[in-house]
Length: 88
Image (cartoon, rainbow, N blue to C red; front, top):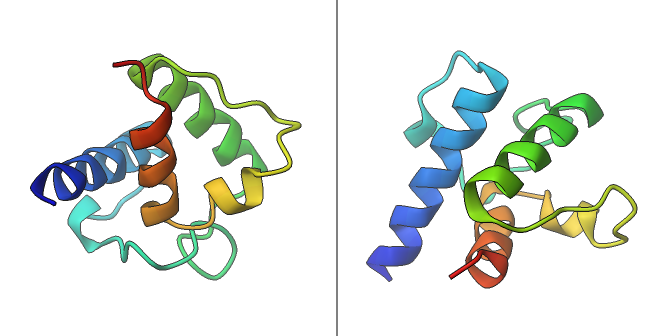
């Protein structure tokens, strides 16, 4: 599971760097929501983050994907999506 933890940390750092958040990436609760009551991200943040993820990991996130709510629900869910879909 060390690879999963490493990837989770990498995705957390990408979130913080991409969105210029003033928090320590290690302080992001992997289970906490990314939007609203969690990190407080909004739809513009989601677009920026989707672009950064696609550039870094070589896959495309579509705005009209019905799974976006689940994919972006938490750091853990987002990391799992990256793990499964990234270019090898």
